Length: 595
Image (cartoon, rainbow, N blue to C red; front, side, top):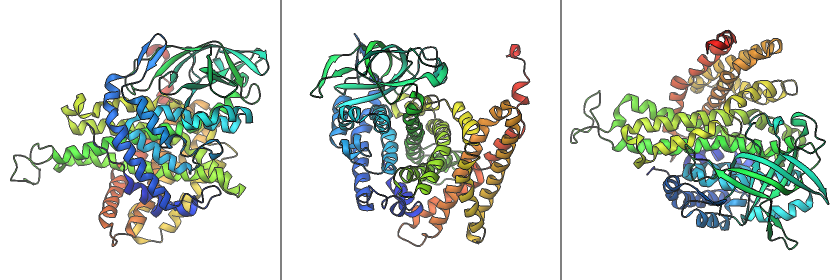
C-alpha cells in the first residue's frame, strides 16, 4: 500500500509565510470567519478524513472497479457508505453558497482539499468533483427556480451532478454535436442523443443525478454558436422537491479503463428526456465553460495529488530498501547493504519529484487565492486583475501539472524497481490513474493552443501583464539582495527567454498560424517552468528569513530543494526555448504520405 500523510506543514508555509492568506483572503467580504484558526482546524479534519477513510479504499476500489448490469452501475464496496460520511461531514459543500446549504469557505481551502482527496483516492473524488462543478455552473447561470430546485440537494450530496459534452463523433470540436432539444411547451424540452465519457454518469451513491447537457435547438446556428445548455435529471422532480418518475435518460454501458477504475465512466443515452434550458438559447458553450474551467484547474490538482503520494511512497521506500553500497563507501556498515537513498540517481529522482510537487503546490495556491480575490474583492480593478491571472494560468496548471504528475508517478515507480511494477505497493495504480489527467477536460495539446491562440492576445496582451509585471518587479527588487542572487539570476534569464518567445510567437503567428501551433506546447512548458521559478524564488527568500526559528529543518530542506530546482530542472526551459525558435519546419515539412 502507498504511503501518504497530508503535507500540512508545506501547505501552512505557503498560505501563511509566502502568500499572505490572512491579508489576501481572510479579509474579503464573506470570508471574515475563515480565519487562520478555522482554516487550520478544517485542514486537520480534512487530513484525517482523507488519510483514515479515503486512502484505505483506494486500492480495493481499483481492484474491484465499477460493475454494470441491467442499466445499473454499482460502485466498489464501501464507496456508498464513504460518500454518505463525506457529505454528512460537510465536505461536499465546503466552498459552495451558504444560501443553498454550503459552508461558503474560500475557494483556496477547496483547492487544498481537492489535492488531499486526489492524493488519497482520486476515483472517489471524481463524484463530488463533478457535482461541485455543476453547482458552480447552475449558481452562475440558472434561474432562481432552478437554483432552489437543484442546488440544496446537490450541495448536501443527496443528488449529484455531471457534465455531458462529448459524443461518439466529436470530442474537442463541440460544434459538431448532434444531440437535439425539441421544445414542448411550459419551459420543457425533449432531449435526444448519446453522450460518451461521462464521469459519474450513473452510480448508486446518490438518489438523483442532475445532468448538464449540451444540445442543439431546431433553429440553432451552425457550429458552437448553436449550442444550448439543459438540465436533465435522472429522476423528474415532484412538486414537493423529491425525486419522482424516471426520466428518459439511461446508462448504455461503462468504459473498461486503464485507471480511475472506481469512477464510473458512462455512455449516456437520452431518449426524449425532459430537460430545462439554462439561460438564453444558443449560449450553452459560454455557460459550460464556467464548469469546464473549474474542472481544468481541478484536473491539474489531480496530477499534483497523485504526484505527492508517489513522492512520499518512493521516499519512504528509498530509506528502507537495502541494495548495494554507497559510492562513497558503506554508510551503514553494520547492515548487509545501504538503503538506496544513498545513491545519486535515486536522490535525483526523489528531488525531481519533490521540486516539481512543491513548486506546483505553490503555483496552485497562488492562483487559488486569485480565484477568491476575483470573486469577492470589493474593488473592480483588483477583481479584474485576479480574474486575468486565473484565466492565464488555467491551461498552464491543467497541462503542466498533469504532465508532471505522470512524470513523477513514473519516477516513483522507477524508485521501487520491480516492486513498483507489481500491484502490491500501489505505485503502478498511481501511474495508471495519472495518465487520464493529460487527456480529459481538454487534452494538453489543446491547452497549449488555448494559451497561444487565445490568452496571449486577449485584450491586447492584458493577461500576460498580470504575470510579467509582478515577476519583473520581483526580479528588480531581488537583484538588490545578494543572498538571493543564486535564485534571482536564473529566474531573470528564464523570464527573458519567455518574453522573447512571446514576442516571436506574436509576430510569427500573425503571419502563419501553424508557427504558433508548432510552438504551443513548448511555450506552455517554458511558461510553466518560469512560473515555478518565480514561486521557488519567493519560497527560498521566505525560508532564508526563517533559518533561525523552531522550524529550521523544514526551511533548510526547502532551500536545498530550491537549489536543486534552479540548478537541475530550470535549465530545461532553455530546451523549450530552442524548440520554439526552430519554428514549424521540422514538424510540417514531412509529407503526410511518409508518416
